[in-house]
Image (cartoon, rainbow, N blue to C red):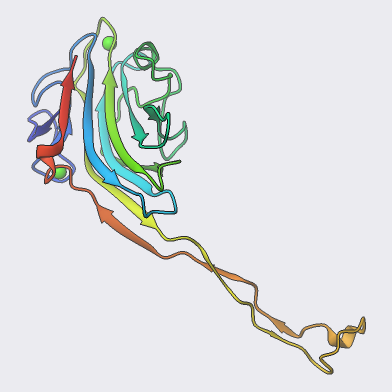
Length: 214
Ligand SMILES: [Ca+2]
Ligand SMILES: [Ca+2]
């Protein structure tokens, strides 16, 4: 996978995006390639952040595909696949080249004709360092244009704060079982969650991106 201004597609935010197979051609047979993110320091983060990016792909359905993985500084952590098979994330539960690469079988595989935004929670990453990678794998025949992504963002959330409820009693404040002491007004606990978004521009951090081609 590499970064640039492809001729085969229009980047989601032109001019540049990440894609594999080069800027003009198809990917290779038996390809196993990654885009590796910078290291993020999430030691002071208490709530797992949300990840989103825009993707566009044309791969051999059920055979070639891509996925996102993460590794943290937690003890004994290894690269693990982020997200599940659902409408907001992966579209395919049985991608043979991803399975053969040891990544399990879920990922994106097949063809879509327009950029779509995908998002998921980066589970079990808060409180540690984190590194992400977008990985692509293909089998031994039938190459297509490949997998492209653009406009990565990671949205951090603060911990939920519970505000005290407001309650007004009628009559005496001495609790009794009289129905007259039932609170007349009560607001339920309000949980507010402030959010702020940090847009990770992997292009700016390009010098830190390590590309592996196997
Ligand atoms: Ca772009
Ligand atoms: Ca193939």
